[in-house]
Amino acid sequence: MTLSPDPLPASRWRFLGVVAPVLDARAGWLSALGGRHQRAMADEEVDACVAMLRSLPGVVADWSDASVALEVDVVVADAPLRRLARVGAGWWADPGAALDLVAPHLGRPRDSVLLLYPTDGAPELRSAWGYTWGTVDILGRAGFSAIVSDPWPGWATIEDPAHGFVHEWLHQVEGVYRGLGLSEDELPSLHDVADRRTTRPDAPDRVETYVEHERRTGSWRPWYRDYMTGTVGPKTGEVPRTRGLTRERWLRRPNPPMAGEAGLDAGTGRGA
Ligand SMILES: [Zn+2]
Image (cartoon, rainbow, N blue to C red; front, top):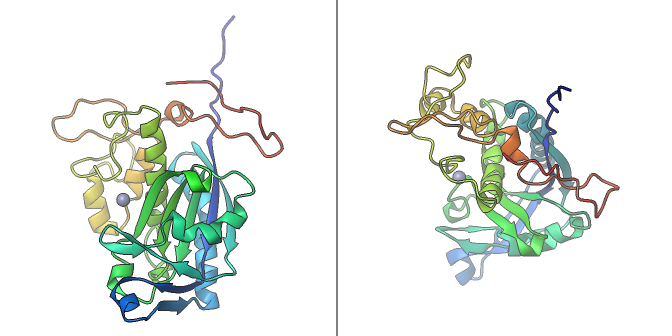
């Protein structure tokens, strides 16, 4: 009897996106003077943030060749973000600062949480595009990313505006698979992009490195596509091998139970 190959299911991630429209927090030198960092999003910005988060399942399915199914809930917080924490060179909504806004939505288990919030433009509040923490115990071991919404007016016109969101989420993913034993030979660090290009023989970007593509278009999409499909090319001097997340590798993390199956282990048990 011949066994026909079983199509592997997509890797499922229960994703919570929280838009916090109001920042009202002490941080940095301003707080030493008794001041607060404050900004409230206009409705148009809230709508753009919600739309961005709702677009992520389609983007990730598209770029991963349907290897990933993000199950996204998007909520708009009704309380201000009142705390920021000193993180690296800046001030961020870390998991502790975000907890009040996120906790009401943790009644269902989440694999991944992303908080999107405004700043008043102070440089120390936007020292990077975003910041990500790996599995966070106080969030039920979900990953957590904080992203500042200030660049939102540009989303309508730049190429692949979701790529920064995919980047922060992939930091969460990288942490999970590193914890499951994938080496940097199998899954390069998300920032180890220089001097690489796709292994896809038919990709329109095959003639340029990922960095050259970003310089030309402003988008890292080919890098994330190949990262999510196991088609990342070697750097000079590296041996050819499968780099990135093939479907088999995605499924090293057991899929969470479907809604209504709480308590069942819906993992496939397949490894690769
Ligand atoms: Zn990064």
